[in-house]
Image (cartoon, rainbow, N blue to C red; front, side, top):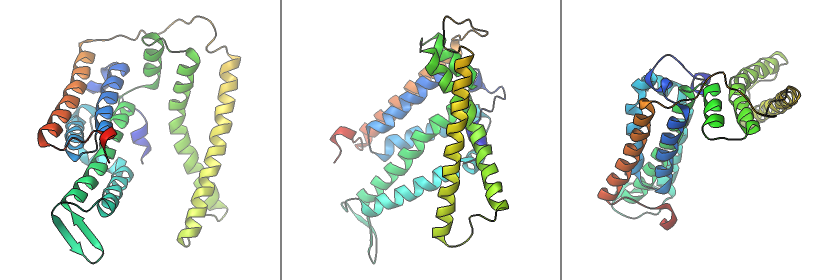
Length: 267
């Protein structure tokens, strides 16, 4: 996935001006609704609504696809695998050798694929429209979360871009030593895991140094003052109402279509 998705694009678009907590509330609400039921109707409604919000982020559907194609590919693979392995009930849609797809199995595959995308996009939207410092201020000022937790979350968000750069640097260093992702699939997997282990080591070292530095500077100790006040505006009310509307519409559409399949009762 491109680093552009994981770092904020604060370009003055509408959603960038909303309080991070209102966006977090809307994102959690629609995500919970999708997770409550395994059906393709509610997932499709939520995903379609999320795509309609793209102009508020300042990106097109094609730009989003270019940046999140690994997620789309994973969703397609999950949908296909589920359709092949799900219970074969309902009308037969395709029968070719060992491949048998029925109406119910295809619906199950669609539900899994759409569900995965519908769950992933709110998090991406939140990251691309929110400055980590604003999120930390909101968590500490409005939710009264512990300072150490807030500062740790802020440091983690700030380090995401650095980890992407670190991955690129490790790749260049391995190529310089004659180690790359060429060869047979087993060799490529071994090289990938080796580079991934190196990234984990670097991340732990960086996090340790940052934690020691923050502790030495007294972060999280005593009362704090705030350079910027976290406030709610009328825009935040509309953001929360949009989350409620999307969640309610998804549930209503699934119940009306007869596809609502509450997770606890799913078999």
